[in-house]
Length: 191
Image (cartoon, rainbow, N blue to C red; front, top):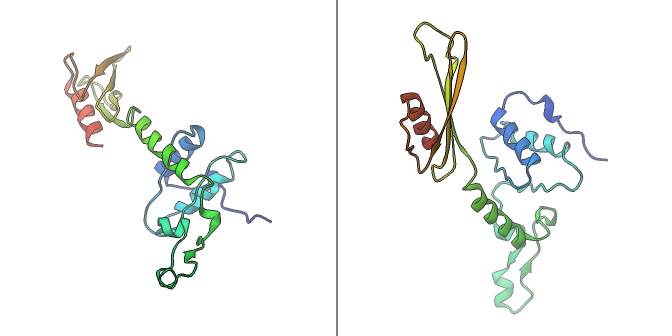
């Protein structure tokens, strides 16, 4: 019988982690590497999500400090020097993906694909008009690793809202940008 884990929807906090896991579950081209201090709920969140995935969905749980020799086995040098069979068995065969080299190739391909993804995001909220409060206007930069993408701006007035889009290429724009748009690009670049 499979042990009952903590249900993913019941997790409180860890919003960036939960969002990352949910996005990876939706788009299998994404990968999530979870790291953090002991006892912060990393494994609980990951195990909770596994229960929600479709059967057969890819999910690899590597132990802390996993190295190639722990995953693939190793060589017992003393036995090898004596001419005896010297290969150490795998530490835990359940932790080894069926096609480790294929998995490495897929991870590299995902890294290349991710460089074009709009991964640098920043939002700057402000009051466009002095007589209005609430920071209802905003500028948002959505950029890839090369600084290419778009800055979206929404200016809210008393009776209307206007939205603008400006193309960004290598962290700059051919059109004049407002100070808030420049700030959004700067924050997105800083990560």
